[in-house]
Amino acid sequence: MLFPSAFLCLHNTNRLGRLYTAVMLGFTTLTAAFTSSIFSAAIAPISKQFHIGSVTSTLGVSLFVIGFATGPTLWAPLSELKGRRLPILIAMFGFSIFQIAVATAKDVQTIMLCRFWGGFFGACPLSVVAAVFSDMFDNKTRGIAITVFSMTVFSGPLFAPSVGGFITESYLGWRWTEYICAIMGFTCFGLDLFWLEETYPPVVLIEKAEELRRRTKNWGIHAKQEEIEVDFRELVTKNFSRPLRLLFTEPIILLLSIYMAFIYGLLYLFLTAYPFVFQRIHGMSPGVGGLPYYGMIVGQLFAGLYILLLQPSYTRKLEANNNIPVPEWRLPPVIIGGAVFAGGLFMLAWTGYKVEIHWIAPTLSGLLTGFGLLTIFLQSFNYLIDSYLML
Image (cartoon, rainbow, N blue to C red; front, top):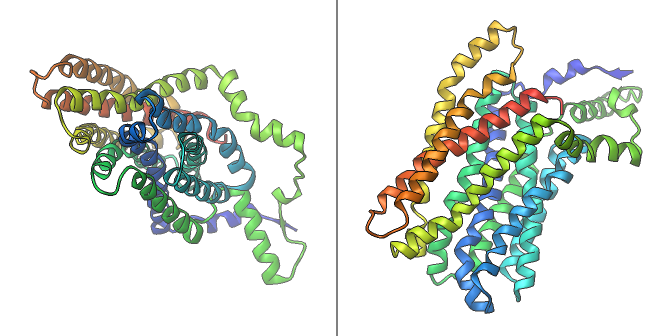
């Protein structure tokens, strides 16, 4: 007997449970993003301890971001094959282990290798959590959920430099920047292990069918998905090569991905630009010099509020269109965000190059760049989800 998909209505009906899941996964994503940039505060002490140049030490950030770039080629298709929960658990455990490896490293080679693998494992929540939200939320509420998700992705790297700066200035030293990330990672792993439920519909149906077989002793109950036998060729074709085929054969995905990669890359370039402006030119300490990043965080909060204020208008259009989303409805804020972001870059370059200009001027530029970053990335992300929801 086939296990009917109607049983799926039993899943995700608890709004409070969905909220807990969203907060838990938001913290998981924040941890990965936070870890990506906290290493920037350790560049100077690592350069001094291991007698290497600051440019070489910067590889610790670059390799982590390269891990971010390569990790989704595994985690995204694995989440469609085995569900969302298993990849997140594997990734957060591996992520935490590699943070301990960095913290206890005896040479710079170990630091760089483990930073890459930390980024590779840390890429899982960045690529899978959005899919979890698309499973849990409908067209009306998905935009709000993705807004919260995107704010964790972008605010994490901006919180970290000031925290890392104060840690490296204290008696704890640079290694504790990684120990703290490991503690956060294991906390996320524990939360996900005990409270994260599967949300991917095909896997949920299989689990429901297994539960019914145990309860009723009727071994004929099974889900349609259990009839599917996956061989290696089909696995490679449908699951692991699909993201790459979508990337290189769909012009919309390719062009938007290039633009989003450019914007996200600039976020990490700020980790080099801000220390130059506020520490070298204005003479701030590493900890205090990381505080101007909060200007960008406030800009992101404004962007999130702006997107949420647009939600009622989007909902009305959605209801008028029989709840069929039109992806292009997401794009007008991207145009505004692109212009504001460019203005923020201009303001930072114009005001941040000499000490005679007060430090508040380049700090305020973060309001514009933070606003632009989030609106561009968030609405582009929503556009891709609406366009390719099943994939």
